[in-house]
Image (cartoon, rainbow, N blue to C red; front, side, top):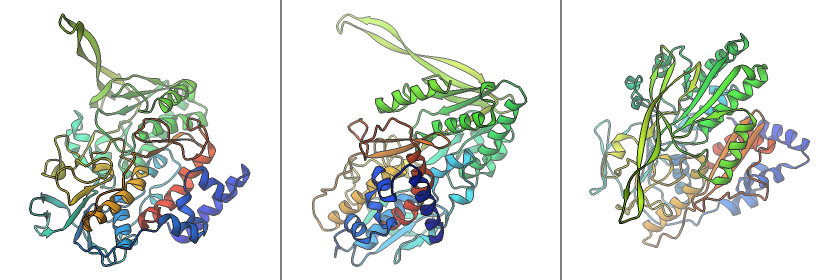
Length: 489
């Protein structure tokens, strides 16, 4: 997005929010985005909210990953350190794409060009970029080996490599192996062919999702009773609201076409809740009921028959086992049943994991993710290593909204470590999920480790609102591009 495109977006927002009788400044405050004051031309407020104490600390900093988390961290470090020595390792020139837009692509609101941009356009001045991949980690020697064979040393390491999509875990899709959101999706599209199977988690397949959704709607228009199913796997995923967002958008498009009554839409989550926070769970259930959605908890997708359009789930439940006389309670036994479900349209949220070269290395953990203190983001074993974003073992932290809070904490603590001081900055678990519930409606779910809603403004956070749609569709991307990626918000 060029600067003039940003201005056009803000003009559009101004026009729309005036219809509801508020100013742009009020809209930002409603969204809890006071630190985005620079978008309103208020340099005084912007500087006050983004300034960081300049540091004379010295050290060679290596950042693994040039996506949102990595570049935002590099930008803030670059502007805070007087003599920065920062290198980013990233093989993909499109790594800083605006991933939250994939759901809008899948729903036919945006196009691929709306979310793609080059890392070179956002690389902070003075930061070195190496277009390669880190494949070996030797934290005891403070060294990393690249795919080219080159070995790099560091004083401090930041791991912000994101996660990988593991379609290969699903029987019938084994040959797809692992992929990334911005990797070439042609292999996945070719495999899915015209089966009605889609996924918005790769940008190319998000484009194809819109194509398959339109075919699904055409079938409904023909008078055929059609079935759409939507999955959520048994692993951690980035933006856990996205599996529901694409279901809401499919519903909206069916309603728009006047054929909603010809379609059954069913959600198959591996867990037993719609959302980890009770208030949002309850709100979503009410929304599902109002839209005549169906759902089946504790169903994990294990197999896909693309030719016959059949999805197989592992359904599980608990039953009483033998009675323990000493504990005076029954043991519980997990039961399993294979459930086959036909479909016309299926959105797969693939299993996800840390890249093997990280998860299986000395800097990884038994569960794959990089183990860090959830508040300081410092590695639990190696004190000169920090991690943030999707790859970090941080509860409820795999969203861009989480990164917006994490990277400032990480930079403050990294510089404190460089200066030999205590790590006083704390990440409070803040996460935000703008949950698209309709064309023109969003529920802005904000929460932290209190497991309670943490709204930025005293509005009922469980309500779907047009103002949050404006935030999601028009404001968040320029905020990311000209705020986060510059280390300002």
